[in-house]
Amino acid sequence: MIKNGVTVLNRITEENRAAVRRFFEEHWGSSEMVLSSGTYDCSALNGFYTGSALHITGLVTYIIKENVIEVISLDSVEEGRGIGSQLMNKVEDEALSKGIKIIELMTTNDNLHALKFYQRRGYHLAALFPGAVEKAREKKPSIPLMSENGIPIRDEILLRKDLII
Picture 1 (cartoon, helix red, strand yellow):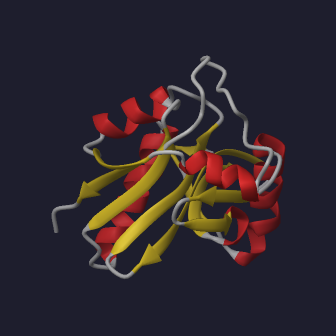
Picture 2: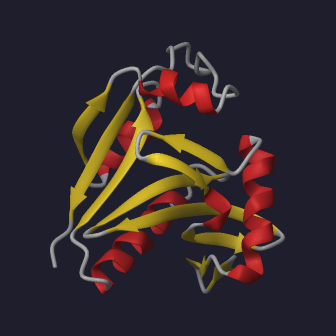
C-alpha cells in the first residue's frame, strides 16, 4: 500500500500470520527455511510486509540472537520499486531501536541479485559455508540443484552489516 507516495510497512502480527503463511506457500511452496543457522517457519517469525494482508507485495522476516538480528527471508514481488530497500531499512531501524549493532543474513552462491543488492546497501561478505545447501537438502529435498541462471546451488554466504548507533 502506498500512502502519500510512501510505501506503508506493516508489522507481522498474530492477526496477519495466516496471510504471511499464504504468501510463502504461494511464492516458495512452503514457509519453511533451512539455513546453516537453523530451520525456521518464516510465517512464525518477526518481520514486516508491504501491501495488505490480501495482497502482500514485499516481506522480510528475522530473528534476534543476543546482539545480532539475522534476516531469514526478504521477498519483493515488484522488483525495482524500492520495496526490498525499505524493508531492510525498517529492520535496521528495528535493530537500532533495540540497541543491536549487527545485522546478518545468508544467501546462496547462485543468488547474484541478492549479493549485489546487499553489498550496495553496506553489507559485506563475512563467511562462506561450502556445501551448506547440500546439507539443507537432507532436511528439505525440494531445494533445487540448479538456479534459473544456470549456477549450481551449493554454498551459503554470510553477509553482515555493522550499524552505527
